[in-house]
Amino acid sequence: MANKVKVLVCDDDLTARILMRETLASEQIQVLEAENGRRAIELFEEHLPVLVLLDVSMPKLNGFEVCERIRQHEKGKHIPIIMVTGSDDIESIHRAYAVGATDFISKPIKWPILGQRVKYILRASQAFEDLVTQQEKLHQLAFYDSLTGLPNRQYLMQDLHRFLGLAKRGKYQAAMLFIDLDRFKRINDTLGHSYGDKLLRKVANRLQANLRDSDIFARLSDVPELELASFGGDEFTIFLSRLSGGSDAVVIAERVIRSFSQPFQLEQFEVVITPSIGISVFPNDGEDAETLLKNADTAMYFAKQSGRCCYKFYRDSMNAQAVLRLQLEQDLRRALKDHEIVPFYQPQICIKTGKIVSVEALVRWLQPYGKIIPPNDFIPIAEETGLIIELGHNVLQQACKQAKLWFDMGHPIRVAVNVSGHQFKQANYTQLVKAVIEQTGLPPSLLELELTESVIMSDAEENITRLKDLKSLGISLAVDDFGTGYSSLSYLKRFPIDILKIDRSFMCDMNSEPDDRAIIEAILALATSLNLAVIAEGVEYCGQITTLRSMDNLLLQGYLFSRPVTAEDVTPLLTQDFSHLMGPE
Image 1 (tube, rainbow, N blue to C red):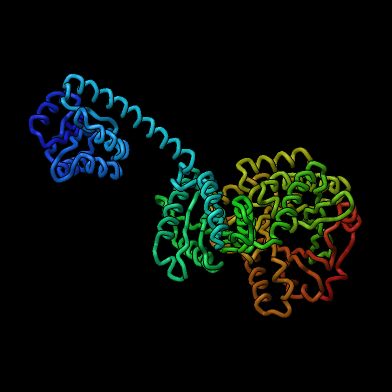
Image 2 (cartoon, rainbow, N blue to C red):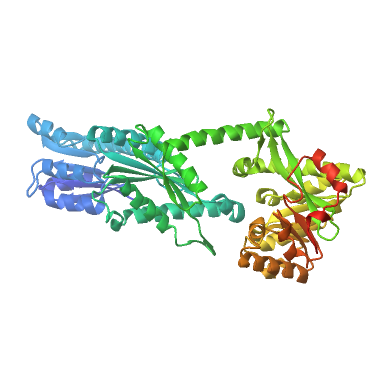
C-alpha cells in the first residue's frame, strides 16, 4: 500500500464513489474517498495524492472551491484535477478551467473510458513533474553555489540589476559589502581542500544565522532589504537596499566581523579566520551592478592592506592606486624575464677584526631608464601573486654565482640570502638549493639562508625537519628580525640555526630607550648560552657599538659601513679595514 500512488475521489454520491474506486483501484493505484469538500481538503493535505477527481456539486465546499484551495496549496500547484460536470453544463466547464482544473468529464460517466483517461493523465503528469524537477535542478545549478547553497554570482547580478533599478526610481541608497576570508589559502595548504570546503560551509551558515538575527537591525532607522550571496571561492557578498545612510552598512559590517570572533570547529581542529570587507554605496560609488561590485572589491583589497579583519569604504583614489598596482605587477613579470631584478650587497663586519666576512644579498629592481625600485614597493606584490618563488630563486642563483667569483678571487665571503615563507614551504626547496650550489660551484659553507621568526614558527615541528634538511647541505641558517616575533625558547634550542639577527628597530633607539637596550643585552646573552653568532643590523653610528663589544661572535651591518651596493662596488671593500669606524674599545 505504501508504494501505491494515491488518487483522491470527491463525490457526495456513495454509488459514484464506489464505481470510481472499482474502476481506478489496481496494484499501482490506491483510491481515497471524500464525501464532501471539506473532507477532500483534509485528505489532500494528509496524503498529497497524484490526481484528484472532483464532483462540481458537493456539500460544505463545492468542487470549484476545493479546486481553488488545492491550487493555493504549496504542493497543489501542478496536481492534475479532473472536474465531473453535467454533459450540457457549459458554464461549469468554463468555471472549472477558470479555477485551475486540468480536465473535465461529463456525466453520465463511461467507466471504461474513465480508467484509460486517468492513466493517460497520470503519465502526462509524471512527465510534467519530471520536467519541473529537471528545471529546478538546472535552476539550482545555474543560480546557487553547489558548496554553500547560497545564491551565486549569476543570481546576484540578476537581482542587482532589478534592485538598483528600483533604487533609482525610488531615489534611495543601497550598499554592497564584499567579504573575503583572510589567509584562507593556508587552510587548504595545511589541512587540505576538504577541510577548506567544510570551513566555507560553516562560514556561510554562520553568516546566514547572524544576518537572520533580528537584533542586527536594532540600530537601523529603517530595516533594509538584505541579500547574502557566495561570490565563489572564499568570497561572499551582502547587498543592502533601502538604506537611510552609510552607517547602516557599518552596522552590518561590524556584525559580520564580530560573528567571526569565535573559532570554527572542523572535526578535531579549531580554526580562527577573519574577514576583510569592502563597502561601496549606491549611487555615489557606482550606478550599475558591475561598477558597484568592482569598487567594493577594490575597497576590500585596501581593508586587507590596512591589517585585515576590518572594513573600508570605497574612495575614488583607490581605483587609481589599484590600476598602478596592476601595472606594477605586469611590469614585475616583464622585469623577471628581462633580468632587471638583481641583488645589491651590504657588508657584514666582524667586530673584532674590522673586516668584511659576509654580505647580505638585498634584492633591487633596476629599471632600464636607471630608476631603482625599492623592495617594499614590489615584494608584497610578488608574495601575493606567487612571483616570489621565481624571484627568490633568481636572487639565490645570482648571489651564489657572485660569491663564487669572489671566492675565486681569493675572498671567501659568505653570502646571506633571504628566503620567503612561500619558498621555504616548497616541498622540493632543499633540492633546489642543492642544485644551485652544485651549478655555481660555491662551497656550501659560504651560503647563508635567512628566515624570519614568523616563518620558522608558523609550523614549528614540521619546520625543524625542513631546517635540518637544509642544514645537511653544509650551509648556515639565520633567524632574521629576531625579537619581533614570538619564538619559543624551547623550540629555539631545537632549531638547527647558527645566527640570530637583531632587528634594526631595536638598534635605532638603543642608546635612548632603556627597553631596547635591555632587549639587545638579553638577545646577546641568549645567543652566548646557545652558542649562536649574532648580526646587529641597522648600525649607523659608533655609539651603538659600545653595548655590543662584549659579544665575541658578532657581526655589524649598517649604513655606518656601507649602504647596499652593486657587486662591482662591494669588491673594493673586501680588503678594507673598518676598525676606525667603531670607536675606542
